[in-house]
Image 1 (cartoon, rainbow, N blue to C red):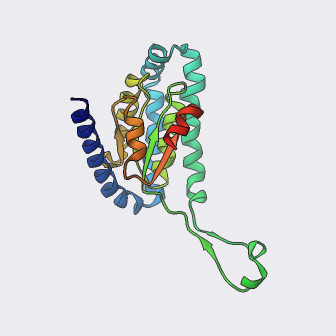
Image 2: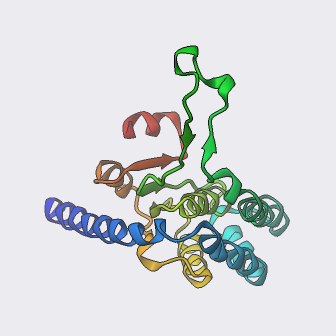
Image 3: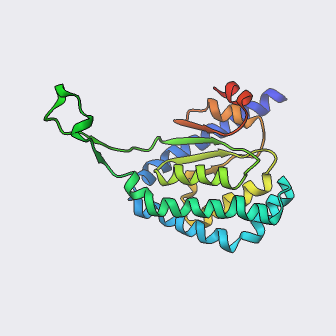
Length: 210
């Protein structure tokens, strides 16, 4: 029975990766200014849903309303503002300075182009469930990636609310996948056919995933 469940879960995860990869190609081709529009809407939704966010964080993690507001909501809103102001310049093609070029390449012109990774797996943490998870997801999406997020099993309510806010902000549903908040899905996600893994947690678990 356990084996059948694991295979079914792995198959479902593979299907999500396929969906994400297909949606990511179109999303990556979208101009950066358009990719930032959902970031701006998400920041505004943080304000509208501040009570719901602080309540679910208090219930699942035990933080006070003040701590959740200062350490989670405001920090996430500020990270959105940073992306709105800086992402276009940070992701723009950058010409390599002649001072950075070795003498045998003098006279050559080089430009660095930033490309999205593709499908990014994010294995989330529980201690700053909004700030750390949302910022990683928003940065990956802004850069043109699709995201498959495995939230901590400690914060299933926050995970569901964050997913709803991301979709309500206008990010493509095919580029935002939230897995069930189950511990065993972390290793499965790390072994899936994705292009990059982001993990926040203990050194012990990090070594296991690596």
